[in-house]
Length: 70
Image 1 (tube, rainbow, N blue to C red):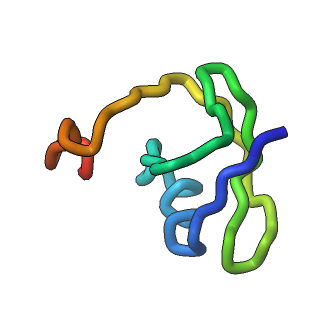
Image 2 (cartoon, rainbow, N blue to C red):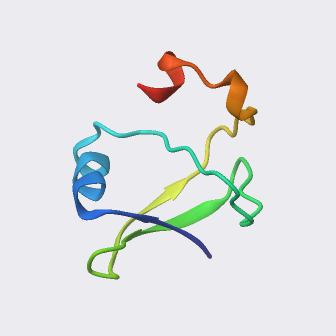
């Protein structure tokens, strides 16, 4: 199963439903819609939940705007 790592404060946001998306640069995991993931707290090394990718959007750096960053 593929994994994504998140800092402790972002893991809390995910569990609270505040954070529902992420951006990855230079990621070679070949993440695709439908992939099942284990989400790992990078501070503790523990899996804190599982997720399924529902959408993947590819953008070039120059295409990222403030809406994407929110």
